[in-house]
Length: 171
Ligand SMILES: Cc1cc2nc3c(=O)[nH]c(=O)nc-3n(C[C@H](O)[C@H](O)[C@H](O)COP(=O)(O)O)c2cc1C
Image (tube, rainbow, N blue to C red; front, side):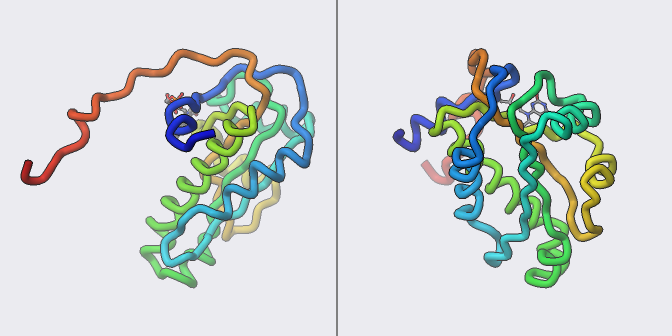
């Protein structure tokens, strides 16, 4: 798949088929995460891949932003200690958030390339997820990525026009 085609074609998928994703395919998707850029190459990210129904349902009860039952959920965490050790306060407060955002986009694009729908979800109880998975203090869950075979591909939400958002310094 051509890169730009993937950038344009990926949609947030919120309706999934009742079909599991093989671990082999999930591994392929997750491998894309580690190739993201990161500030100071800190790679201050950790990912928890949840593909059992019991825990998917538990996460769903803590996440108003998830509308259907996905086949898997990736809990994208930033490692505050690692971020601080490598890049100080800037790393912990700012860069690590950018890092996990880029890794998340890689995950979603790779999923799309492999025929798997995804949706980034920020609407969830951070401390409840932390407790549910017994995460150490240094790990902050920042984003959930739902994954599954798409039931329905939604229309593309409207984009702001290029000319509205791209400004050329000295035409
Ligand atoms: C940081 C972030 C948080 C988001 N949180 C949610 C969410 O909680 N629930 C949801 O259904 N979609 C969520 N989305 C998906 C956006 O609504 C979606 O990306 C946007 O409407 C554009 O649609 P598209 O992804 O299909 O291009 C989130 C996206 C991002 C980047």
